[in-house]
Each structure stands twice: as C-alpha cells, then as structure tokens.
Image (tube, rainbow, N blue to C red):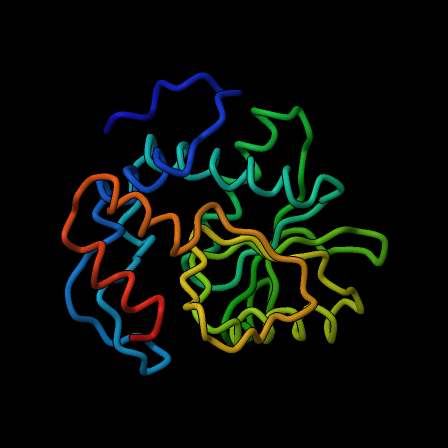
Length: 213
C-alpha cells in the first residue's frame, strides 16, 4: 500500500482517498443490488480495509473530515458493525493529529442480558457532549436517522452531526437528512471526476447512475 508512511499531519486529498479505496478493493465496479434494493454500477465495502496500515490511513481521513466539519466534537459513536472499528481508528488518528482526546462508544444490534449487559459499550455520553456519528457510506440516510433517534431516546442527546467515508447519493435522490449537519470524505461526484480524469470507461456509467439516466 502506498500511504502508511505519510506524516501524521499530512492532509489527505480526495484523489488519494479514492486511490486508497481502489487499492483496498473497497471500491469495485460491476452490477450490484444494494440493501435498499437500488441497482448500482459500483459497490463500496469498507470491510475490505483490514490491516494496521490501512486502518491508520482510513482513521486519518475520517479524523480530518470530523475536524473540518465538527471542530467542537467530544465523542464519536460507531453504529454496528463496520463503523465500530472506524470510530476507534478515527479517535486514535484525531489524537495523533490534533492532540485532542475524543471519547468513543458503540452499540450492539440487540441488548446483551449477561455480563456488562445493555445495548451500548464504551463511553456513556452526558448531556453537554457533542456526538458525531461515524459510518461507512450514505445511501439513503435512513439508518443514520435511526441511529440519531436511538441516541436521543437513550441519552437524551441530539447528535451534533454525521461523518461518512462516501456520500453515494444521486442527484435526484430524496434528502432524508435535510437539516442534519453532515460531511463526507468524498462524494459520488468526486469519484466520477477522478475516473474521467483517468480516462476510465467506468466514468460514463457512474455519471449516468448519478444523473438518474
């Protein structure tokens, strides 16, 4: 992998992050059906990120996005399951780059009745904390809204915002997160622009998908 030895304070460009996803095979082209039932010419799977060097790079990219969009953040929440490790590496990278120690916590999909019990593991947030949800991708926004409602019902706290690696919404897609502070490392338009500059034929099908053609 090309990126593990970058200085801790080096800014990660959109191009570098797209190339990282391609190197990790976390971004693939083909014919896919998403969880929402939508047909897509590409698929993003952050589960392919599975080494120390790759996690370090991913954490840096997310930490920089969190810092830019939500500088008052105090706490990161990772929904199950992929985002659990993402929240952890983002917090580690945030401390490395910005010398600020963030709390982290995550949840199970079902409450545990034995051992420590309960739904949530890690930090227990208080009313004055600024919580940012860290997750892999945004397709419709439905699961993000569910996470926000869960946190408000459990802790009485309104989420400060949401950060994902890729905003994969199309131009005409309904914005279910209207009014919710949101940021992404890259968006679908960034991938399209990158492919066009590289003369990659996938550019056209991606553009058609984005435009709803």
